[in-house]
Structures are given as structure tokens and as C-alpha cells.
Image (cartoon, helix red, strand yellow):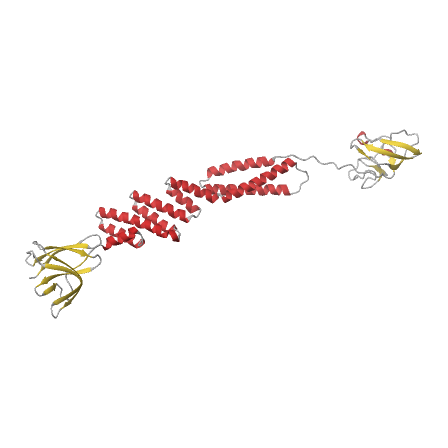
Length: 420
């Protein structure tokens, strides 16, 4: 049983895997033609130029006009009657194939595809949507950057993975350029995310939108910028008279400031507390003024306003009062004094005084005014008699008329009745 090669129709043995003439594979053989058929299918006919030699053995040169390829001389046996005219077809020939150079392989036509253009369009649309839906610029750029890097990775995998069809050079070049562009855009977007947020925060700060600026600087953990914005916000609130909220922002600035900037933040806090205390002082709310000055002196001791507050709290104050006899008559022209140290001797019924001594003389109505009393110091009131200083005491020997001056305000001892 003999078969024919489906490409050249050379007669081959049944079950052969490769054609002995053209070398082609025979896995997909067509229906065999009988070995003595004089004509082959039109698509397989090849012209043979033969020169008779001696009967059935001929030496010849043949060509394939479809491939434009010429084979070299070879020897084959023509298995036909002698009277068979030329030209022959390959279906008439058996024997050994000639020495020949195989035709060039048929190259599959590249498949052109421009899918990467659609990918870039989709990425652009998603980027615009992300930018419009996210308020923080840095977050938008970070999301766009991650998306671009993911797209670049996918394109690189497509380029690297082998496939059955060969992509066209335009497709490969376009996909390569698109992948490189996505990678560059992704890296730039990720690298500039924090810078974009900082720029957005500075624009908000320039508009005095301190709430937004604080939020953005805190989002990127820029502590120095956050402390600066909190200080500016606190001073703005203080200028509007919102001292309580301003103090809260100033305290936040102190917490957020770097070690080298803590002094500046504390100075801002001290200034706000000083302004708040002055406002209370003008409103005659001495208790509130003392509280604000005390806070300024405590929380910002080294700042100018903290020092001023401490000096105001420690400023000497005035003490007033009025001396009368037990019969309610005023005691004019009597020398009185406030002393910071004293000791009463019950056996001698005398008093020894020392320390700070502030003196004054009563007027015609018995009133007296003593300046220079220091806040926080306890004073005892004495008056001068013919036998020396006289200190009014109780049954236990304790001084009866004592006073401690309050900061920022003088003190009045009221009317004091004494025995002649």
C-alpha cells in the first residue's frame, strides 16, 4: 500500500512520517492517489523538465513555480509505460529524492492589535474620576500611581509571556511604550503625593482656612507645619476675642511642635493668656484676670508675656483701713504699720516685730493707706504707742488683725476698733 505526500505528491510508503522527496511531515495526509495516476490535483501539480536516459531511469531538474524555488539534479524512476509523454507529475515518480535546499519557511503574518490604547483611555478616565471624588490631592495621586503601576505590570507580563500568534511590531512597540509610561507615571504620582498634599495645605493656609490646613498637615504628619498653622489659628482667634478656643489651639501647637520650636509655641500661648487676662482686668473681673495671668506665668515662664504676667501678679498692692476708738470716734494722727514678722510675749504683754515694715499715719477720719504690700505675704497690723509697738492679740496670743493681699488688687481691712 502506497500513499502520496499531500504537499508534493511524491509516492511514499504507507505509515511513513516524513516525505522522502520534500521532507514535509505526513501527519495530516490527504487521501492517497494511485501510483500510476497520470494527473494529480491541480493545486499539487508541479512541472518537471526531464531528459530521457535509458528507458525508465531519467536524470532531471525540476522547479516549483509557486515557491519560485529550483531544486538541483536528482535521479528517480518513472513508473509509467515508455510511451508516456512528458511533462510528468510528481505522482508518477518513485525513488530517492534529489539533493535539494528546502524552501524558506512560511512566516505567519503578524497580528496587529492596539488594545493598549483602550487600556490607556480607561486609565485616564479612572484617574479623572479619582481626582474629582477625593478631596486630598495626595490621596488621589497615590491611588492613581498604584493603578498605573498595576497596569504597567500587566502589560509587562503580556509582553513577556510567549503565545502562538506573533504580535506585530507596532503592537509590541506600543505596548512596551505604554507599560513604560504607566510605570513612570505611577512612580511620579506616588513620589509626589505628600508634596501635593503639602502644597494644598499651604494654599488653605494662605486663605486663612486653618481648619483645612491643619487637617492636611496632620494627614502627612508634618508636625512643624501643623504647629505653625495652629499658632496662626490661635492668634487669629485671639484677635477676634475668642480666647478660650485660641488657648486650646495654642496648647495643640505646643503639643505638636518639635523640641526646638516648643519655646515659640509656648510664647504664643503665653501671649494669648496675657491678652485674655488683660481683657478680664479691664472688665473688673479680677479673679479671672488672676487665673489667666497665673496660667501665662506657669505655662510660658520664659516668654515675654509670661514674665509680664508673673510681674503683674507679684506687683505690690495697696492696703486701706480705718481706726476708731471703742466709742466709734476716729483715731487721727496715729502711726500704723504692716509687719511681715512678729512675736507676742504674753508675760511682758509686748510685741517684737521684724521683717518687712510698711508704715502710714491715720487721717482726720482715722483712715489709713499703706502701699507696697506684696501679694501672698501675710501682714499683721500694729500701731505705735508711747511704750512702743502695740499688737492686738486674742486670748491665745495670736495677732488679731492680719491681712494677705490679693494679686492685681488692693485690700481693705475695714474699720478697726481699738482700746485707748
